Length: 62
Picture 1 (cartoon, rainbow, N blue to C red):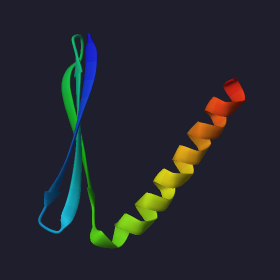
Picture 2: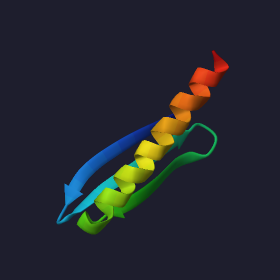
Picture 3: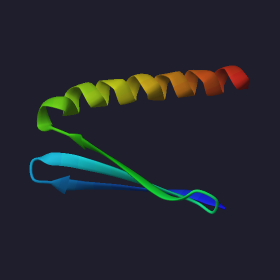
Picture 4: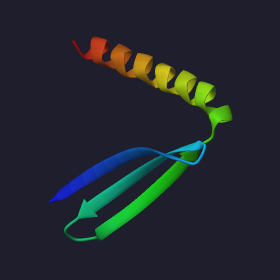
């Protein structure tokens, strides 16, 4: 059994995104990234690009 939990929270003036992975064989691992206020706009742009790519790929599969 495998599952991933994602937590997004504010820590000080940063956005912290923590990904916790659980795997029966490998145990638990955790990764965290911090997004500063200066990074928010560029992160949003990249997320929009990824969203467009995913929607395009899904459309091609139909």
